[in-house]
Image 1 (spheres, one colour):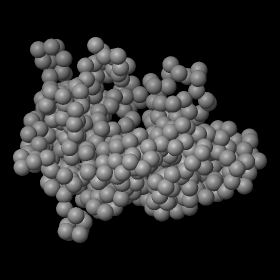
Image 2 (cartoon, one colour; image 1 turned 90 degrees about the horizontal axis):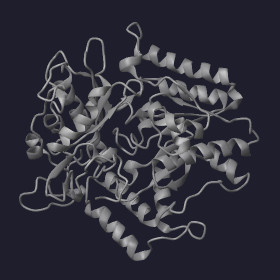
Image 3 (cartoon, helix red, strand yellow; image 1 turned 90 degrees about the vertical axis):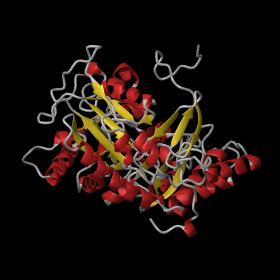
Image 4 (cartoon, one colour; image 1 turned 45 degrees about the vertical axis):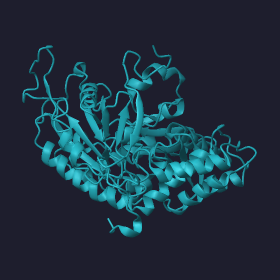
Length: 489
């Protein structure tokens, strides 16, 4: 009997015992290919020796010092590193322990910024439906997962939501992608006018929508238009790159591909690669200056902010990403993965859309490709995909409620940046828990939709990774080669 309150109380979880490269091994000895990097977290895979060495070195020097008394050398170095590679205008960093905390900090800093500037009437946040920004109360309030918000509604601040940039379902047949993006931007501007432009604090959006929609990028030009609208109304643009950022889409920050720089940006997951809990809020220099020249203190803090061990892990992760040219690998393998997913699933009767950027790819599952009708939510298809894939040693990240919070299913693939054979993910996951009938209503012995899953052995045999270690002669991981001995990727 467990005394842990797990995510699902009635579910029995395998016990993770060890990890190496792109695999996790449970206590029973079964191996799982981590094709989703957990929740798009483990960008360097598991047990990377350079990161572990940096963490041990930091522990030998200093494990913890409260930030009301001290800063630490490693926190200063990490902040310098992040600012040096940040979008234009970003000048300071506020460290936290994860994505939800980063969004909470963004909301509070945005409000304090306007108070310090003498604009206390600004009190409204606008975000998008079918978005996810975290589970703490502020983050939940700006998020667009209605099923998750519902029971906590009385506790949430008032926020307003506009349509997501969800081209597969939102763009009309008579619209170009650009026209669709313009319509969405106009919806945002109309909402601002309705609320009163001088009452709005910020617009919050995921640069590439992650868990709730499944790797959905915006149409070209959308974010540039949003940036222009925010600037004209004096509104802050807060980008949530907790899942899609820190290299996941092929550039360090996903907004680089949109040609915009945010006022505030939340990062986490790939920042520390899962080696320690860490997130950060990046801010424009104008925001820092308003606080510095006003009250002189951000009215927000946490006990473990700027934790030396977490900062050491994150700094090591970022140095490995640059040293091993892993962003180039994300672009190369991401393009290959996208192509192979399109080849294998592009005409599948129950896959309506294949989308994404870099090593951040999604498949939307539908009962009817022609009408885009989702499966009956009662089938709990996304949960079945996860269960069946795990049974075959493959970790993917499915989610339900894709369409409107209740209906729709998708599968998210986000393998570690170190993969050399990302396209084999789609061989391993070929038809994971997808119904075998074109009509979508076949019945197996249980009376439920029958399923078929191809073996993951082809993937298991062929996957190779850019790993700094090898677990032995029979290991499927390729031994590390130093940056100087490897050709550019």
